[in-house]
Length: 105
Image (tube, rainbow, N blue to C red; front, top):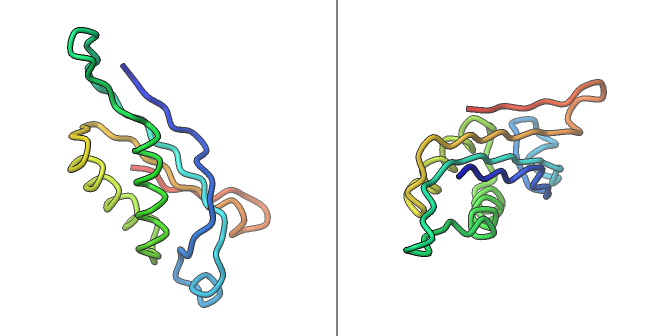
């Protein structure tokens, strides 16, 4: 199975510019992962828990760089849910007026 958590949107402190360290800004996070689902064991990944972990981690850590946020999220999601081949994309839609800035792994 492949799970898509798309456009998880919330406000947090992220960035290196002085104003980014004071005022929360909107971020959009996309997470994609694969896992083996088996009806016999009722083994499934609760995507609401993955979403919650992403939000809590980003709000608590107040990352300077999106790259560091992605690396930390990868480690935390792997540790808690044992998920490999994670794809994470973090976007800052309001940082530049004429484009959407994103970083992905």
